[in-house]
View (cartoon, rainbow, N blue to C red):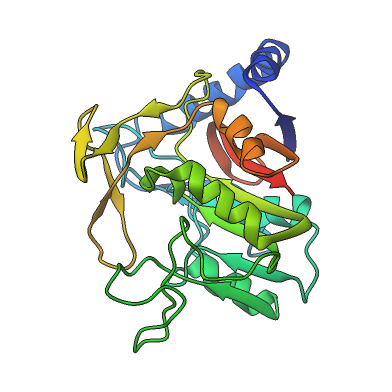
Length: 280
């Protein structure tokens, strides 16, 4: 897998020009394998999570329309059942995050297979979900699920070596405050790894909804994402652009960058995909 690290929009434009032939070839490959497909099919590749060659399962679930493939959410490993983005998360984490078996890790989820895998691999992992204001932050419900909000974490300063937040910040209108809280609880030299809906060709964030006078105001048609706690939709307030990296640094991180990647060999299909890292 080849990873390109970029810190602003200008670097991304240069990357696109420099790698146009390779990107076009990848997109052509996707078009060829999906051509005339209407149901489930397989794509061979190496599963990082299973540590073996497999036939990844691809279908048309969770797509935006007929005949479209949601590459990020599909391309599932038949051994571990992790999809494209999940497998890439573990792979990129191992490459980038400099974690040790006893690293103090906080992940902003607890009811997911991703949390379970981290908890199995590392001895000091804390997970949480947002359970609402009825339960005090930092406490757990009867099922042992910890309640936290990224805008006001219950942890002390410098509590963690690593913080992982996957597809959460888009649901927080006060996301800059959330970045500040992440910086507060991460130790000096520690890292934040996160993913969000990302508009790669936009320097600015795309605001979809806002809170005004304690009410939600929709700027664009409402967009909802799945929630493992309620199994219902959660409103998306923004898709992020390249200014997000500067906002992370303004919040207290000394460096922030995007990792752009794809790989036919590992089954990370779907054109350019992004994960983000900030160092305190």
